[in-house]
Length: 162
Length: 161
Image (spheres, rainbow over the protein chains, first blue to last red):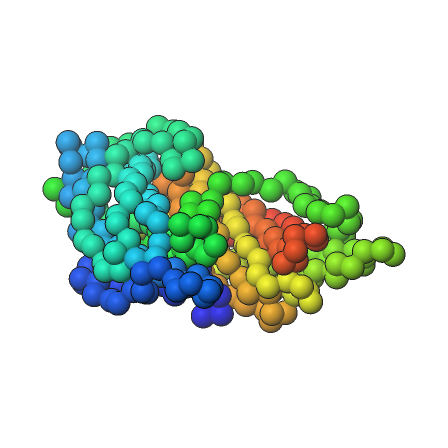
């Protein structure tokens, strides 16, 4: 592929698909005096299946993410979009996993009809239901001085179950 | 920007930074070609060439939560490293309108590149098989941001399973 479409990788971004645990060695903590900032590394995967919560008001989705220890807490956003009988169910969930240099797997609650990360309302949403959905997820992290940043986006199709 | 704002570009939404004018010409088969004007005396920024074309078909993803659309684009310029392509898709479906947005990055090497862009449905109706209007554009700037161009294109595409 000549340029990224569904996966945008930052400076050094690794994708771990299929829900596998992400065991990678991320960059060293900090930078030595007199050296330029080390590149920030980020990693993100959305795992399938996700689980309905409160009759479809939300979805619990497993996320595996990591960032190098020289990065400030990242912004991780997951949007889940599903066709429910012709109507769209969509919502957002956010997290800020610690940047330790190791990956972490955790559950993230994505609430239907929630506001987007920039604060705007996503509009009315149908409740989520069993089926397949697009998980549009991204992680972005920078060094504490903001001199270097990295972003990764993944857009897998996941299954939602009860 | 992680989830880029759903920016919609008008029919001729030319973004010109640094006071330079841009010329847009529509090529055959719905392909748009944009070329920034040559710099005037005293300006050092070089022009940017960009073009974009939307494929004639899209493919439903996740039962209509999204549509994969093929986009062919290129951009180039001595001080241009990368650009962005974006696409909005609008389809009349039973009971309303399905619409969504997708985007991707592009390296401005001058080489024509084709990729599948995932257009994700927004609030409202899901996409279905049928015809839809695609509004796509490519934008690119010089690394010093002194010069930008935005090239839009419209096309009617067929959405299939």
